[in-house]
Length: 110
Image (cartoon, rainbow, N blue to C red; front, side, top):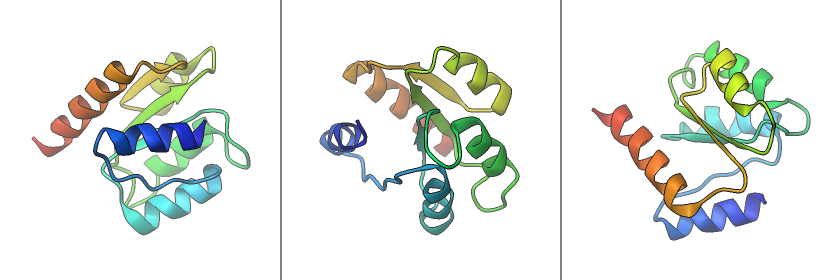
């Protein structure tokens, strides 16, 4: 799934940096300071909600917007509770994903 998302985002013209799990996600975010984090809630080591809590408390990455893309049945609730800026459920529709990313990145740069 991660490879499919990476390929899809690359096709849409985005530079992609990926992490295999929540812990690596924190390290990669601190190292690369991405414009946007796309987060699955069901990850090894650090689940999505815990990742979001840590991100919000960590200088340098706390203001990076997060789009949750997950099959988790309560993705909307987790997004609201943990402060993610957006959420989508799997399976992802390409046009909707592209529109969400564009909207989130344009808000960030306004």
